[in-house]
Image (cartoon, rainbow over all chains, first blue to last red; front, side, top):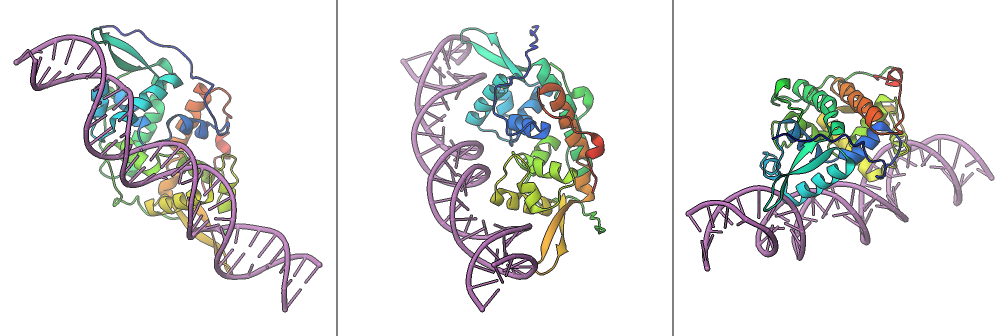
Length: 128
Length: 128
DNA sequence: GATTTAACTTGTATTTTGCAAGTCACTATT
DNA sequence: AATAGTGACTTGCAAAATACAAGTTAAATC
């Protein structure tokens, strides 16, 4: 199945504390869960249940809310993978995919500084 | 005034949701404020009031709690800059300084993807 | 008809954060 | 000597976010 890409830009209408690039990024994903969903998307997970079963135990209401926020922010889009009943899967937009640099910087930092963290292979980071 | 360096490693005794490097990093700084304090430290700010007056409006109780957490985590240490009354200033440990790669990845991402974010010069990112 | 599945949604308890004010140990001013 | 000011917190309470458990919906399968 081919998935259409999305090239929408980041929405500029959300609240910002300042024009600091760090602060603005934290306004988008400064919490304990958002970046884990983005990580899962890079791992090739696309469906609600896959995110939900990802080890860390995100609760269903938080997951639903974060997916909506990411969609509104333009980092993620959803597309139906079946009808009757309609069910959607989630994908990174082109903008969302540019987060690979941030994700990878964090992985490399943690692998060096936090003992015991697993070391994923870059080849397993899917861009779809 | 010369500041002694700190080479302590990251504490391994804190709670972790998983061994995922992203999840572990979020356990340390997955909130709206911690990374802004680290940003300020890289900007050469070291005292409580400087953090407090940093535009985004962190409240005093959150600031105090985050500084304690960062100290316990081994990313920041405090050292007295005066006696009577004793007052401390905060600095990045050697481990804390390694976060420059993460900070910089975020800055570059935001500068590309979030319109209107300011573009700091790398030369202004002090490592002290 | 009853059960199962995927993707949510809702209600309520618990935790975290925000906001305002207060404290403490001094120094400086009148 | 009393008063005000400073820097670094601390405290109390309200508000918001998160966690936990259960319920809903539209189908497919037994």
